Length: 98
Image (tube, rainbow, N blue to C red; front, side, top):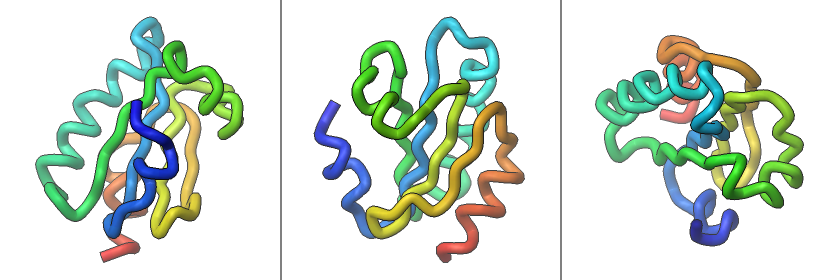
């Protein structure tokens, strides 16, 4: 994975989903994330981060429950939620930046 600072250093909002392959709720987020990308296209950057492969970052951001969804805008953490979130909730939060 590229450096986290580079991931969030973009002009669009960044939606990050911390997940694990073994976590059932995380697998449900895949369809939601695909829908967000389909609707918003290049107006948002969507990133999935596997907690098992990125333990240091997971710990630094205090990700304790899966999935954890975080929105960064202009390199600042703006919104965070633990557990499954549907596309309606995520779209409502992301639309605040357009």
